[in-house]
Length: 105
Image 1 (spheres, helix red, strand yellow):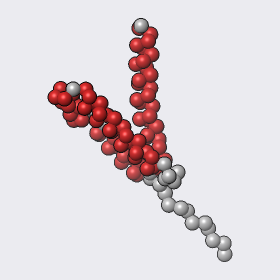
Image 2: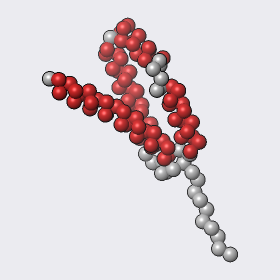
Image 3: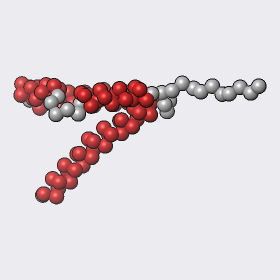
Image 4: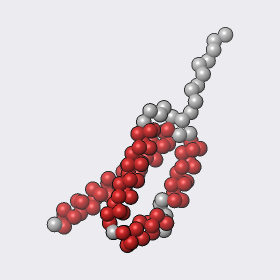
């Protein structure tokens, strides 16, 4: 049972943090360098801190309404994120304008 719990926790960590790291790679490729740097700064300030207001909000939601609405909010956030990724699929491979071909004289 110990190994099963260990494997489940390791796989949960893998499936949470690997996509988070890949999001940074995708954003860095889709956006300009400045936009990617600003997004990384904002991500660090909002999400990677130990004290995050949304964590408190989720805890309060669970205390007041139970786990059903809390999981509903998590699923809604996942669907919103999936919709944003689907909207980004047709984007170019980088955020820079097309380079004009040199003209010969």
